[in-house]
Amino acid sequence: MSFTEPVKKTNGTIREVTLGSGDGAYVVGGETALPFHTFEGTMPHKPAIAMEVFDVAPEGWPAPLVDALGDVLADPVAWARACVDTYGADMICVQLASTDPHGNDADPEQAAATVRAVVDAVDVPVVVYGTGNAEKDTEVLKKVAETVTDTVLGLGPATEDNYKAITAAALGYGHVVIMESPIDVNMAKQLNILATQMGLPADRILIDPSIGAVGYGIEYAYTVMERLRLAALNQNDSMTQMPMICNLGKEAWRAKEARVGLDEEPTWGDHAKRGVLWEATTAISLTMSGADVLVMRHPEAVRLVRTAIDELAAG
Image 1 (cartoon, rainbow, N blue to C red):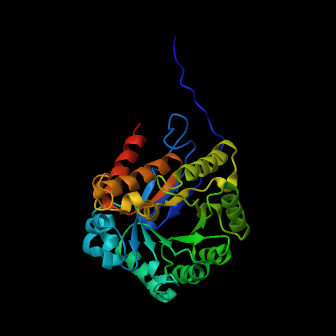
Image 2 (tube, rainbow, N blue to C red; image 1 turned 90 degrees about the vertical axis):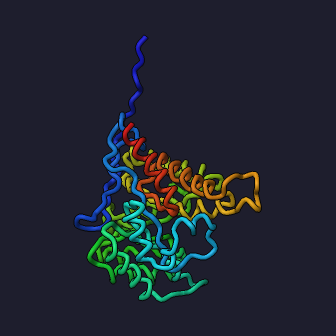
C-alpha cells in the first residue's frame, strides 16, 4: 500500500521586511508555509540571528556569559564588531540599557551617538531596543531615528502606550517599527492596524509577541506565535502577515537554571553548558513557531542555533 504525504497549501504569505541598506541589507519573512515546511510552500529566508550589544557594561551576568564575551562588554563598538566578525551575527541588536530612568537615565543624545557609532562599525543591519519604559523610550527612539538616517533601523519596543510617537518617527526617517504586545494575538494585530492607519507601510513592521524562555512560559508564547502564523497563512489575514522578532537572550539568561552555579545546585551539571543549552533550546523552539529574527546573547548558543537552522532548512 503506497503512502501519499499529506500536503496543506496556504492562502497567505508573510511579508518581506528589509533592514539595513545597500550591500548590508537583510530581508526577513516571505514564507508561504509553516516554518521549514518547504514541502508545502517556500521559505526564502532563513531565520536571522541578531546578537545583543549593550550600550553600557551589563551587571549581574553569570560568569560563563561574561567569560565567553570577554573584554568587549565595556565597549559597544568592539562588542558589535566581535559579534559580526568572530561570531557571524546576521544583525546587531543594540540594547539601550543606559537609558533606563531607574538606572543610569542616560540622555537620548548619548544613546543615539552610541547607535550611530555601532552602525558605522559594522556592515550588517542594526535593531535598537529601549528599556521598556514607554515615556523614556519615546524620547530615545525618536532621537535615534533622526540621528541615523542613512540605513533602515528596527526601532522598538513600540507598545500601546507609545506607538504613535515611535511610528511617526519611523515614518519621518524611513525606519522599521517593532510592535510589542503582551503575548496576545488580538493585541498584536490591533497594534499593526493602528500603525498602518497612521500611514506606516505594513512591510515596515515587525511583530514582537513577547516571549518566555524554556520553563518560563515558552509554551504559551509558542502557541500565540503559531496562531499568528496560522492566521497569516491559512486565513490570509493581512494584519498578522508581518515577520516576528523574539528578544530571547534576556529571557533565557533570566532563568534560574541558566544563572545559578554548581555551588548552589550541584546536581544540575556544568553551569556553562547549562546556560548555553537553555538559550539555544529556547531559540530553536521559537524558530519552529515562526520567529524570523532571534535576538541572542551567548556565542556558543548562536553557533548551535545556526547549525540547527541550517540543517532544518536543508531538510
